[in-house]
Image (cartoon, rainbow, N blue to C red; front, side, top):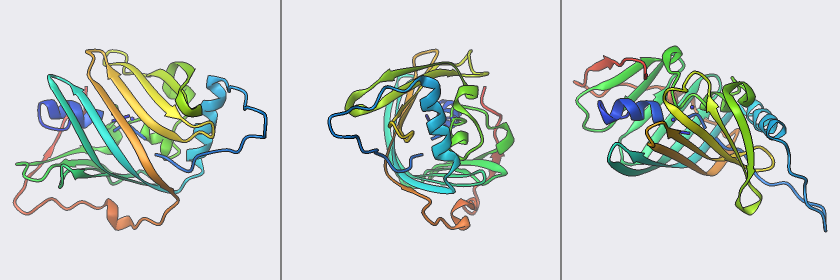
Amino acid sequence: MNLANVLMCAGRRRFASVCAVFVLGWSGAALCFGQTSPTPSAAALAQRVDRHYDQLHSLKAGFREDYAGMGMVRSETGTLFLRKPERMLWQYANPAGKIFLLDGKYAWLYSRGDAQVQRIPAKELDDLRSPLRFLLGHTKLEKELTGLKLNSAENGLYTLTGLPKGQENRVKSLSLTVTAAGVILTIEVVEVDGATTRFTFTNEQADTPISPAVFHFTPPPGVPVVDAAPPV
């Protein structure tokens, strides 16, 4: 997950790929000595993910975003902040000065040095970042993803894979790597043309205090705001 157009051309697409939707909480569950936990069903694990994020009020985590497509390969890092309701900030350290912000009314995209700020109404932001909505307690995985499947991954983790509803013409698959407790560690979106966006989350802090001011964006002086078209 990107939920997921980041520059105007390659950017319109990354703006969609970078909202992904998704973060983390705390991980781990103790196992009884000499026993292993039974493998859950896809539906059961999806419900654990839903419950985990429904209970959160805020979240802070480090992220790494890897993108490969349109002849480009790029890795970016930063910090993700989430706060209910409808507040999300992707604050990039590399490249420094880049942000993707959802303030409840608008989504804002800006990189230091850009000639303009891109803005889109939050209600129209139904793109590859949209899976992040269930991290804010708004959606259910089983309703968001069709053909939901579960596979075992390394180190006792699991991978949930499905197709986001309404994006069949654009997305081939969306995969979440999660713990048995329902904590999301990675999100990977593969588009129909093979372009892939992968988010990896680290150092999660559940329900950490986050000031509302974090989710306020003021365009730099002299930089115009452009109302971007919704991703297609």
